[in-house]
Image (cartoon, rainbow, N blue to C red; front, side, top):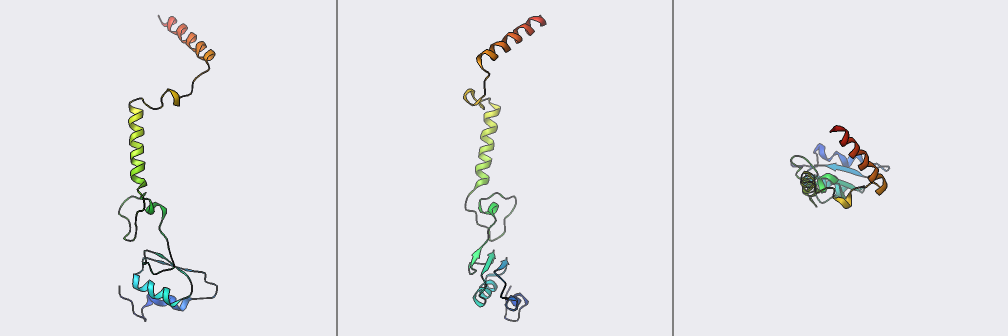
Length: 130
């Protein structure tokens, strides 16, 4: 998109009011957003509108790669939580399937007296089945 000064996209210039505390610009062309930011005193916040704005918005899920599907052109991943989560789930599954989780130290146990009473009841029950 090529913007000219008579372009409707630049109608923001007519919208600067004293009570306006900021303007949000989403996925505009970089040149349009740069012109708007340079021409008005109101702070501008960009969402994929180029680096010439006063601030930026990037959704947390995009920032750490917790999204499904193709991200927008302006998305930059600063971490890979998706890979970390996938790896953690696969490791958990492997430990469960192999009966390594939870181990004895990670399990709750009955007090010794209660455990002994339970074993007595179980032995009596087994004896009745014979």
